[in-house]
Amino acid sequence: MGIAFKSALKILAFTAASLAAGCTLSDTTPINDTSQWSGGASPASLPEPGDDGTTVVALAFSGGGTRAAAFAYGALTELDTLIIDEHPRQRSLVDDVRSVAGTSGGAIMAAYLGYKGKDGFVDFRDRFLVKDAEATMRTSLSPGNVIRTTLSGGANDRSSFGRWLDEHVFDGSTYAAFEKPDRPIVWITASDIYNNTPFVFTQDTMSALCSDLDKVKIADAVAASAAFPVAFSPVILLTPQKGDCDYRRPDWLEKALNSRDPSVRLQAYARALDSYQFNDKLKYVRLLDGGLTDNLGISGLTLERARASTPYSPLSLQEAVRIRNFLFIVTNAGVERQYGWGGSKPNPHIGHILASVADTAISASTRNGFDAVDLALAQWQQELITYRCGLSQAQVLRHRGTLAGWNCRDVRVTTEHLTFRDADPRLYEALNAVPTRLKLTEKQVELVIAAGREAVRRNANIQKIARETYERSRLFDHIGVTRTATN
Image (tube, rainbow, N blue to C red; front, top):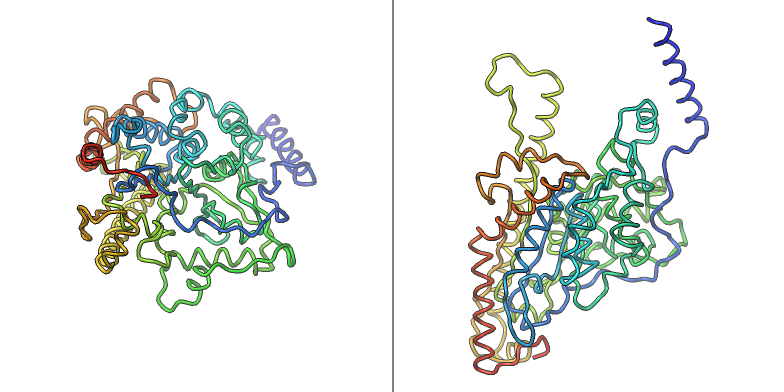
């Protein structure tokens, strides 16, 4: 062993010992305050519509770094070209978005739509997609970064990407900025690595931590959702101590814990929330990338359905009577890696094997997740039909405003899964070569945006629903029907 190498080892050992002895390696400040809880709860239903309520759109954006955010942005941009109404103002399908969810890279776009709204999200390309979000991050394999990663669980903390988001994208805003009449509900998903469950930033979740969701910075929630292991250290939340707040379990949580035939997913989530209050050994909750537990960003809607106390939740009763189409659009920017060793007899080296194992696990989880949500929403459609067909004419008239055209079975709940395969096939190979980074070239960004737009253009069901909604609005205008949510 050479003298220089021995000296380097001694320096590394001394540095590691010094850091471990007392130097702060990462920002471990909790993102919540257990003295700020005001007793709130999550909304009981999606926001009321600004039109007749016959079309409701829900969105979920997958993980995948800036690539995922660009794909979601492209899909949103194209949805905004699908005009569904001309009176009293021009409206697009984006106006009917009542909920938006995201995980990891997709969480950035989801949060920005909630923050800026339908008329403001268009500058997301210039404010985020073509910027270098890695500018303040530690990305090299330097000895210092290796030591930091080893001792702190990740090379970066809130002072890098999270702060950059706060300063350059979300302008220091908290969740309170989402509470505007024309904004959808926003569900950001991270992963609770103590309970091995999704962590969805909702008031019910934060109430279990005696914390006010409105006080949480948007950038902190998004950074937690995007905290890929090793690249980032976990984002930390403080659990309450006895007497911190007068917390009571919501009815759905009590039911999930005590049910003999529960939704396994909901019960696991309920137990996680319960641990924040009643596990004396759990002082801090640590969050990492939402893709570990939900790479599609579907936890928000699926948990809402699982905890529903009515056949129509998360719709209101009025929405349940008015609705004709519930459209759930999931954008999945996952890549399908092509392995060069597929045609050779010798086994690949361990690095390729580990990469393949990770890709296989993610792909299997994604397929299973989408099949599960598709099945759950198909069941919800049947429950909606059964409920609607059990209503009296007086009830329909009260909540719908008219009996004209009423058909209790005329309601469709559909899920559309948009991937790179739904774009121009000639772009597929190039799209799969776009890396999972927080910094892409402008050419790569434009490529992925174009793919998102093309995936929406080629989707027959999305185009059909937009066309039918527009034709129905024209008919209402012709016959003089008032199309308001308060009919």
